[in-house]
Image (cartoon, rainbow, N blue to C red; front, side, top):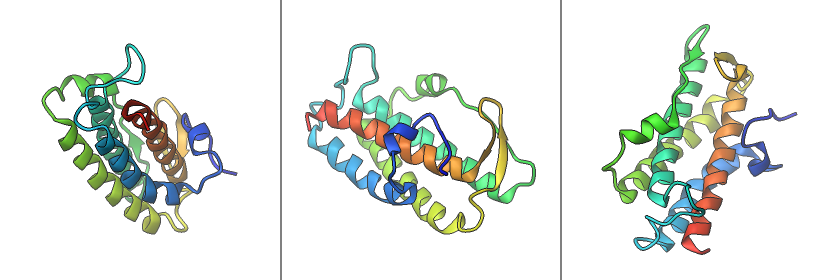
Length: 160
């Protein structure tokens, strides 16, 4: 039974490792289809622009990739939570192109790492202040669903 994460609905029945391998390319294609006209575009009033979504995706892949690596290498690991809005306040000058390239690079590296590293160790547990005791498998499912969640937003902004 797959773990339940905040983005389980977006992943559905898809294999999360397969999704992690495919989504960076799909996200690049969707982002570039609307560039540069739509990088400041939003999918709804009050929502982040495409540039901010790309920055957020890079942040999240960095943070969750570190969590998985730390959980697999550190005994009694406790994940440090992060405030996505506070992080965004410190990323005012990164362009959409820089954020996209950072996301694709980190997400691709995470996909390779997770494909290889979690075999037989996906049920490794660690603590998180918001989610309690979670597994590396939870991170894999959350990361894949999160990417798909925002891919849909970027496709909407790009008019795809």
